Structure formats: C-alpha cells, structure tokens
Image 1 (spheres, rainbow, N blue to C red):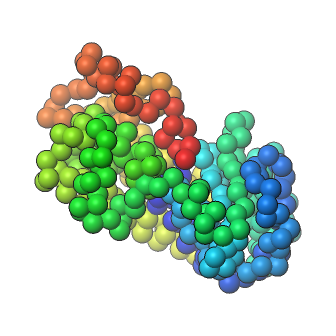
Image 2: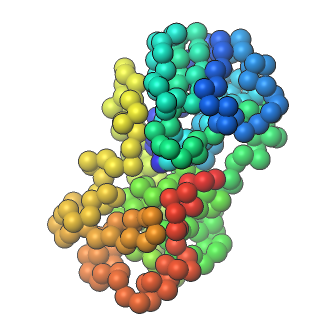
Length: 299
Ligand SMILES: [Zn+2]
C-alpha cells in the first residue's frame, strides 16, 4: 500500500513531467474504477493539469485552484505507470489511461481484487468529503500531535495507522516510526508521557521526510516502475524484516501476526527486551488492532 513517501514521490514525478500540460483524454479500461458520475471524464479533456497533490493516501490531480479534481486511491495494489503517448497499456492490469500532452499516466492494479478507485469531483468542497481527516504529522505542532494521539485510547499501531487520526501512514511506515521512537506497537496512547509524545512526533516526521526525500532522489531523471513502489524496502529497519538483525541493537526482529496482518518490532529496542506474546496481548489485539490490510488503508 503506497503511503505518504510513495504518494509524494508519485505527485512529484507527475508535477515534474506533466504539470502545466493538457490532459488530452481519459480512457477507462475498467468502468467500475470510476466511482462518480458527475463531472464526466470527458468534461476534463483539454484542461490543463495545475498540479498533483496528496490527499491522505490518495493522489489528487488538480485542474484549477477550485477544481475539477481527479482523485485516485491506489489502495493496496494500485500503481501508476508512465508510458510514451499512444503506447499500449499493460494488459489485464490496466484500469485507466490519462493521456497527457507529454505521455500517458496509466493506473494499474496487479490484483484480482479491484480496490483502486477514481473519483472526479467539481470543487474543493466536494474534494473535502474524500479527505479522511487525519492530521498531517509533517506540519502539525507538538500540541496538535499530542492532542490527536490522545483523543482516543488506542494501541499506538492502531492510532498511527488510522486515516481519521493521521494522514498517509499505513502498515509499513508505522512499524518504522515506532522502531525509531523506541515505543512498543501495543502501548496504549493514554500511557504516553509528554517526552514520549515528543519522541513519537519527531520519529514520525523524520521517518516520513527522510523516506520521501530519499525516494524523490532515487528516481531523479526516471520514473518509478510498478515494483519500485513497495512496502518492503531493503533499507527498512524492521518492517518486513522478521528474523533479521535489528540495525540498532542486532537482536532479531520480531513479529505480531494477526488476521491478514504482520507488525514487526524489535523487542530489545521497543519493549525492554520482552516479547509481545502473552494472553493479554491477544485480548488487546482482539479489541484494538487492525484486522485486515484494508482496515489500515481503505479510507
Ligand atoms: Zn533493536
């Protein structure tokens, strides 16, 4: 599931190449991908793309300061592919083609489950209804961040990945943030001290900014391919690293598997060396833990 750094990479590449150019046509290869009726896709043709911006985990293509907007939610397996004008989009997995003046942006989804979506909305008011409402950790003050994280008493994993609480953080980056903050994913938000809130905010900001900048630099002068936007990066500290050594302390990275989900953490760095595997944990997981990948990412 593309999260904040991945979505910002896509916005950056779209702006760099297609910003200020016209949308020539929209072709829907799977009619179900479009979830709105008005405005029609045809009404946006020959309009100039002002910019692409991130809305939570969605990409909003802006055709005017007050719209219209094309909003793409990639969900888990949705990706953008960048192709020369008029080239044949990849078979089966292509959902829509945005033909721009300088090339085509193809929305693909390499999954049988069709979850990626496109909404076309007329103005900022309609756009705001698609915003799940989480605050942006990059711009929030410490007071705003602390208030938000304590608004409900939840596990840190659930709080960070809730799109209604924080914008753009999913399963992968929440693991990386909690490892950097040296906090257990099952700690309850109500138990955080002021210092821990500050450490968590700082870890969230530095993790997301570092990865965003790193990805933008990595794809300087070239487009990311579909496999380049991934939740499993070799240089992640803990996410997807079960059984491998923690880069900070060398102890093996642990996991909590529950339903379709895996959370990774270092027991030594994040939980005073204790494994999270007792009965109270399973009770906690039942009551406040994301059960499906979609729970983390669906809005
Ligand atoms: Zn460690």
